[in-house]
Image 1: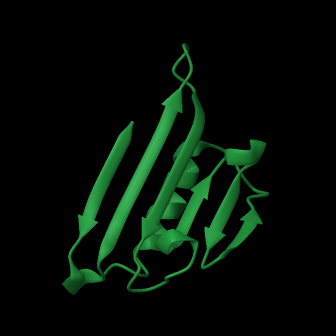
Image 2 (image 1 turned 180 degrees about the vertical axis):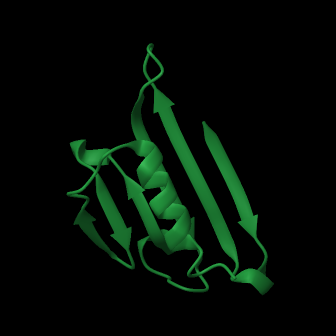
Length: 91
């Protein structure tokens, strides 16, 4: 899956990008979700908030810093969390 959604400048600007890769059984094995807006944050390639499991662990990006996601339960739950957090920036 590779989805991109452009956000109008009136609503905060930027792009929401969600990528996920499945194994042969349909389980998500790798993912990346990010809200990118250079209008809000210029560092980290404009990534305002994001989650991914690169570097062999689940982690959260939040303006220029990364934090482990210690309470990871599933990709689907993390996607809901991401969508809720993005709503704080996109009006």
